[in-house]
Length: 165
Image (cartoon, rainbow, N blue to C red):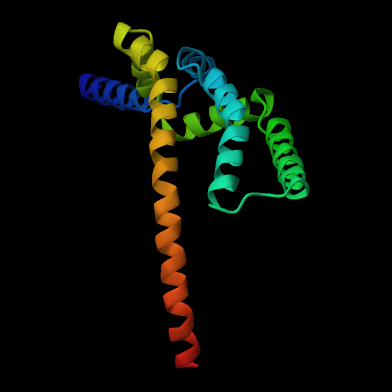
């Protein structure tokens, strides 16, 4: 009987250990290995460029006057400033830790750390900025035609909506 209880206790303990929440220290290590702070910094640097391209794409063939350009530039700069103030690593790191603790077990975090410290993981991290840049470029090139199709659909819908009323 003692052996059965010991076996059951061992199985319960093993399953609890298997599903143990990840420690803050291991998550911090994973965030460093995955270079999350660096990716965040890179994203913030690119926000300004993306904003400018998006604003220019929203008015194709319509050059902005110097005053309009000044207003657009000022608003874009303010937007970027707010993002930089609100998305600092010091403010976001605790949120990342909380999300990772709620989402991953210690065993999963350990596996991710092992991956990011492996040659494949290091290559993945080093190449992701280029992958993301290419992805954003492709998405931006697709946005202009998509916006045109959306405008056309809205123009078609407007008379139909008025007729239905």
